[in-house]
Image (cartoon, rainbow, N blue to C red; front, side, top):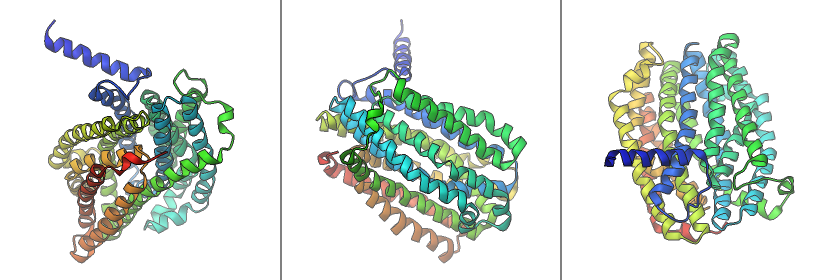
Length: 463
């Protein structure tokens, strides 16, 4: 058997092992293998979600620019819901991973269950606000009267389903913290696959609100799958009803880790909302539609990058729990290198093939021009996105969620937002100026995050 055949066989066996979801000890053995086993299902998990984002935009784009603008503006607001979900998920991953590294699976399950209790309480307020004030939210985002008229129902359904959004993220965070990335992948695959199947059918029969209905049904199915395996599964985590008894000490720990992580992503997503509004304000509906198509393509490629970053978070948490600090640091540096190499290819793709990519979604010349320009500008910073994401997730995985929060605040609100206004209005660059602030801020974020990771205070955090 040739060397190539042996290598291919080993690679295929490793892929099968990563997708089978067999329990692994990530605190010993080969670090590249540990990254690979965790990252493959995490990348596949988020890749199908990003496929849905693009497929959804493809079908919605056939309904016209008002529909595209509605989806884009609504998604910009829903990023706040995602921020809450990711914040809780980050805390759950960090704490569950730490307990698993300490070889305390019962304590890990208890912490995961307590995070679900917090989720249920939080979601009530968010869902009510979305259902009651959907038109006002769209107006606040700068939508035209036509967009508000046609899109309020879509926005109401999407924001009203905040519970399934948060549960889907949170429970997957619990699985990832336990090292069961394959289960997280399967649940999101179910949700996304059902979305992809139902989306064109429901849009055909119900119009724009059909897209929202398909999304809610798909995500609900994914959550049902997750809950079943939390209680009935054969993995290292086995939830029991006793784990849900209110535990003030655990709840306090989760909130202590979660609130900076939540604000961390609210800060980041809030700046995206400002930029989205600025694009609509300086370029009009056509610019907004082009930007939204470009952004969906950006999401398509950045979520797999996030998958690698999540692998770093799990490895940091579990290795700190096992007392292997040097192994945790080595895992992060190696993951950052892999991520930067992967994203360099994406950067070249966006720089040289932006127009053909955008033309898949629209043939309207004005939207096509805006979208192509936006995609090239955003694509120029992909290597920085890769490094910044790994460094931030590494700090989060250690439970040091405050440091990335302050970094995000400085880079996005003190740098990105003012720069966007300066370029868009001060220098008359309009929507292109607003978008140029994105890669500039990400470059700064990568440098600052790298500095604080190398400083090493995350190694001393207790959760």
